[in-house]
Every structure is written in structure tokens, then in C-alpha cells.
Image (cartoon, rainbow, N blue to C red; front, side):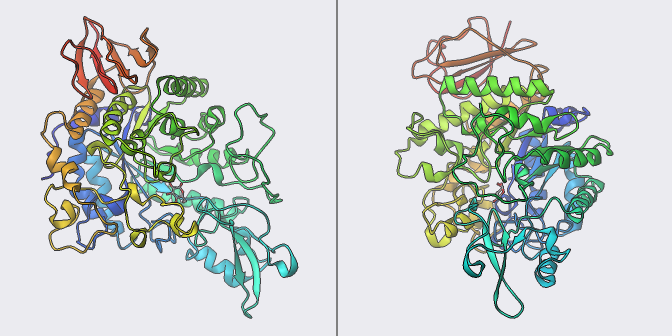
Length: 568
Ligand code: GLC
């Protein structure tokens, strides 16, 4: 049932460009949930290899694989215990090498995830740090401090974990008495490293080289805006984050987006630049201020960064237009390509996000918790997600597709509490349903056996339960079906790979009704997206290349529908 590799040459020819990363349509593989070859209910590298033909047929230019390193899996692999090996649940280093070679043979670049803000508490460095005790060089690789209050019983400051609760964990001394605290902005098993420490700096540079030498084409950098902390560790108090756009640059948050980060990434860029073909970075940078994001994208720093403003933007024409304009202007100022992203393994899937009232009384947030209990119109959500896909793939720059988006998968919102795996759930005592709903294993087959084709027949249950009806959105149910979301993505990516107007470059807004986003790209291409409630007329002389839904009987573009046009 694997799709044949029918269009690799188009995707591959884009990848022959030295600046492939300025154009790439990147497919995100969450390895636990993509394809399980050995039947243990967890996806693996052998599963990815078996589906590379599908990805080539889909027409993506690159894959980004979430962490595949040895890990106690306290945060689904973002707690890395060895950055230069493969987690046995996922496979072996030999299999990773083979996968990289096979992807390259199909014209697909390989980006992997690096986690430099924190390690696992089982990483050799942290084990050594605990054993060595206060004041040791081993402890200096992390951020240990005595507590406040009587007997140091209170955390060193008021910083909060992104997963809920205080950002500090107290150690126990060898004699059993309570010891110093260590900083961990995420789970207790994810100690933050100290980027002022030379061992840390050289260790990560060596890791970059290790994987570049194996042929990896780039890294997605986890929590790239978090590496540097104010070493005085002041309280955050009521300082907001993101800081408001109009605040002066000399106001800094004590642990996000600090100026010292840029110097670190310059050393990373110098390593990447030693390699040919060009290696590239994409930063996970949640700063909420376009000009601060662009600061990471200067010539000698990161190549690209995720555009989370676009991801978080409601489905409203004026908001989308504002985000697109701000993105293009700030990226142009530093000569970097924009990226466009609708979803990932941390956020509510776009179908379910767009299914909610877009005029919420609060800014759109990325997490499911903000949508729970709000009425959902999943048909509208799917229509909008499909239109958003055409918008994203037509905008200048590169684009990211999270596995399952090409199937129109919704968020799974009814995972039983006892089946949830995300540490956010535990750290908020269940108040936040976390991110498991977008991580449910992919349905490859309409037939429910073998976990809807995620695993071989007779396999263990999948690591997260799949909902009944998952098969209706499976690859086998959608492949070859005109109008399916899978075929929409395949058509759009094929056009994107072949059309000289698409990928990197410029765009011009066209005159259109206020609820419509219409823009052209040279030569001869236009994208129209109707975000409003009423159908709108399309230019009379244009040929439709691909559309996210049917046009009206008289050829108008209906509500929540997008179209790509070849202009005469
Ligand atoms: C990033 C990852 C997320 C992880 C966190 C801590 O935000 O995308 O999945 O939990 O970093 O590493």
C-alpha cells in the first residue's frame, strides 16, 4: 500500500540548488507515531524507511525527524541521554545511516532534531554532576544553586516550568540530606545546561559534526531561544513573555531570547559552513516579536526559523495579512527566507483549531487546552486547513508539513487520562490535556488491523490509542481519491516543485475583497484564498491549477476555499 515513488525527480531537482533550504517543503516525522515496523506499537526507523517511497510520491523535499537519540522518554525523546547514538526502540545507528542514504537517493534531504537547552538526567554529564557535588567543574555544566529560605527549602527563584509548576528540582546529598537545586525549564528529568561552560559548547559542536559527517543535511534546534540565562537568576516577577513588540531592546527576559544566544549560533553556523552540500538550521524560536525572530537569521547565524506567528494566527483575513506582511518584511530585512507552518507535535492540529470560533475573546493559542469545551465544526476546520495548506505552500519561502496534515487528521480530543503520556498532563495534575492529541499514530490503512496499518498484523497496541473511525482518514482511504486531502497535497507539492514562481522569491498582493487573500508571484501565478463567508468571483482569464474545494456553479470561489491560478 506504499505509494510508488512517481515524482522524485521534481523534488530532487529543487534539492540540487545549494540553497535548497530557502525553498524546501519539509515533512515532519514524529518517529514514535509515523510507522512501526517491528510491531511493538512504537514507530521506528525501519518504519520510516518503508515509507520513504510514500514521501517521495507526496513530493516533499526534506524530512525533519524528531529526536531519535537514546532517551528515558520522559518527554518523548526530548530528554536525550546520548546525542551520538540511536534509541534502541527506534533502531540502530546503521539503520539511521541506511535511512539517510535511501532518502538522499530519492532526492529527500534529512534534518534531525538537536536539543541543546537541556539533557536527560541520565546523560553522562548530569550523572557526573550529581556525583561530583557542589562547586565541582561537573556541576558547572548545569545550573545548580542553593535554595532560598530556611534550610534552602525554597527554589532559588520564581521561574516556572513550561510544563507547569516551579522550574527547579532539589537534589539529595550523599548523606541523605536535602542539597542544592537545579534548573529545569521543562520536566524534572530535563536539567538545563549551562551555556557559559566550555565543555557544553564543545560537546554540542562535536555532536553537530558527528551527524553532518554521517550526511545529515540540517538540524531543527529545540528551544533555540532558551539557551542563555541571566546568571544572576533574578525573579521573573510579572515580566511578560513574549515581551511586547514596542518594548526597547535593552529590556530582556531572564531566561528567554537573551542577546548572548546569537554568539553561540555563530559558532554553530561556522561548523555548518564547513560542509558541502550546504547544511542548514531551523530554530524553534518562540519570541512572538518578528524583529527579534529575524535577529536569529542573520547571514552568520541560523538559516531559518519556524514562523509560529503564522501557526497561531486565527483564520481571519486581516490577521493573516498582517502576519504575512510582518513576516516578509522582517525576513527581507535580514535576507532570510520565511517559513510557513500550520502544525507540529506540540500544538493542536489545524483542523481542530480552525474548527473553533476564530473570534475568541483572547489571542489564539497553540494548545488544545484553549479549545476544550468550545464548540467545534470539524467540517469547517477541514475546509480551512485545506485552504491554509494551499496558502502556506504558495507563500515565498519554505514550508513545514506535520505528519498527518496531508490526511486532514483532526486532534484526538478524547484520549483517556490514564493513556496520556505527555509530562504536561502530570505536571498540571490533568488540567492541561497536553500534546498527545496530535501525536496519535498515523493511520495507513482503512482496515483497523495492525493499528490501522501503523504496525504489522498482530502487533502490540499503539503507544497512544487510535480513535475508532481513524481508518476513514487513512492513506489507503485517500490515495487516488480525487478531492481527498492527500491528493490535494500531492497535486500542490507537484506543482510547487515544478513551477518557477513557487518557493523562494517575492509576492504581490492583488486587489481583492477584504475577506480574500489574493497575491501573485512571477511568472504567471496567483493564489486566492477566500477567508470570508460569501463566494467571490475569480479573475476571468485564469486557469485553475489546483483548488482546495469545489467552485460554485458559476465558477466563484466559495467560503474557506483556496485556489492556485495560472495567469494568462
Ligand atoms: C520543544 C519541543 C517539545 C519539547 C520541549 C522540551 O518545545 O518541541 O516537544 O517538549 O521543547 O524539549
